[in-house]
Length: 437
Image 1 (cartoon, rainbow, N blue to C red):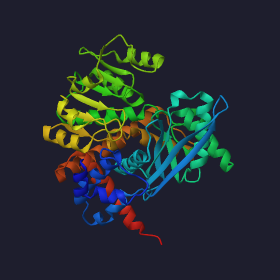
Image 2: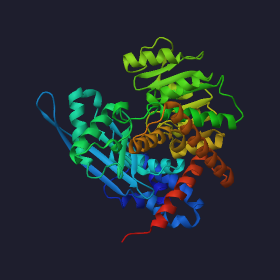
Image 3: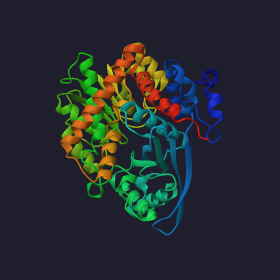
Image 4: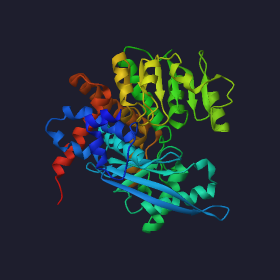
């Protein structure tokens, strides 16, 4: 959006009232605000509470000083944002990335509010992050960074307050350090303070692949509703990590053809199909897709023009611009990442008849199984993986059906329908709780 468009839409005035950020025109926070504006006309009397959705409840910025292995002291900047807690404790991941900013974390927290409500989980939305290049830190430096960050944000997290989880460049080990640090500080083992933990520490079976599985489950249902079959569909996957890799694996097993993949190390294409199992072994050894000999290396920009039926953006936010939306041959977009599609690109997809299954339902598998983990930790009773997958498939299937029906009833996109379902739940909770004092 241009500055003139921002001013006309009211974004400029609204965001300027949040004095701790100066958002750029293409920021994820402004993308989120544009999505909220599109749903407000469909909320009836609840629209009077709409400003609630446009302001995070709490934003914490922390300094993280750590001693490096060479004896020097470095300072890193960390964030934890709780966007909305009307429906329950905050829930959302923690990412380690050199480009993390407060406004990015705000947007990610807000999308978690929408995601949890759209799926029907009893959570609010939260998110955290540290501006750091984790690959440049040793194992012990990474541990010290995590423990100090956890201590700094410990004043607002807890099993009934705000529950972090893995995100970009964080994993079960990071969660184990976070859980241990929080537990030491409160004087008792608190397994429920984070999810995505190792299994011996109260983690849940099925959690690692849950987000990618959710992309497959919701994507398969969308394909069925479009009157297509998974078998033979050509799929391009951007972001070949845990989410994109798992989605590719499941679609390939169902008979789809993975024709292009992209990650931070490069872009590969093979019209006849990429051997997903072989690529997974390569990524495990090389930590990236570069050098894999089962596909042709192409320019990164060419990824968006590869001939495909399904596009799965599973990297970072803001990847699909208007230009890329105009160039894709896909009939269906499955958002494995959070906020990958800019509003202008959304409009182009709509004008071209390209269906988008939005992030707030498409990649909700991870937080859904995180909810299962949280419940299992409180009850100290754990389910097997088949039960977890069955429960996940049912919850996502029911949520997508509700959203699809809402889209048909209102005559809107699946994204606006998902926001309509979620915002109604959030704002009704806000209205019924009232204002204190």
